[in-house]
Image (cartoon, rainbow, N blue to C red):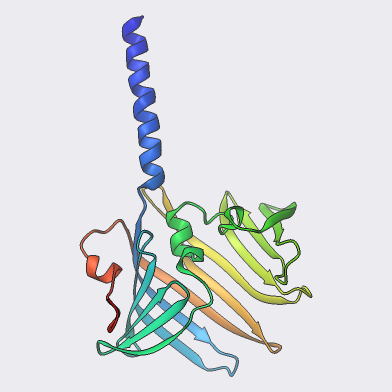
Length: 227
C-alpha cells in the first residue's frame, strides 16, 4: 500500500510540475508570412517575409524580403523602420506587442483575445449554431464594445465597434495549427472600415516554429542608434 501511495505521489508531483512547465514553455514564435492587401483605393499590395517574437523581450520583428528588403520593429508603442541598416522612420504603432496574436497565443490567452485579463467586462453570451458569441465593454469609457466568436474554444472572429456602435474592424481567425500544445491561426483575414470604405488584409503564416533558439539576434534585433 505504501509503495502504491509513493508511486501515486510521484505521479502527482510530476503531473503538477509538467503542468506548470507546459504553461510557460511557449516563449518564442517564428514564421514565414505573406500579407495580401487591398486598400481603400482598390490598390493590391503584397508583402512577404519572416516574423520573430519573444514574449520576454516583447519586440515584434518583421524581416521583410518583398517588395523590398526592410525591417520593421514593433516595440512598446512605436514602430521602427530600418532600411539598409539605417533607422529611417519612427512612428506610433497604436497597439502594444502584448496585445497581438503572437503574445496572446504564446500565453494561451488568444481564445478571448486577452480581454479576460484587460479592463473589458463580459456583458452578454449567446450561442449560434456551433459558435459561442460574447460581447465585451469598458464601463464609462469612450471605447466601443468588442464581440468575439469561438468554436471549440478557439477564437474565430472579432468585431470592434465605436461608441455609436459603428463597425470599425472585423477579423477572422482560420486554419489553426497545433505544435506541442501551442495553437495559432495560420490565416487571419481583417477588414477595416474607414470613411465608408473598407480595406482587406489577408495574412498567411507558414513554417511556424515555437521556441526556436538559434536566431537570438533576430528576436532582439538591434535598433540603429539605440543602445
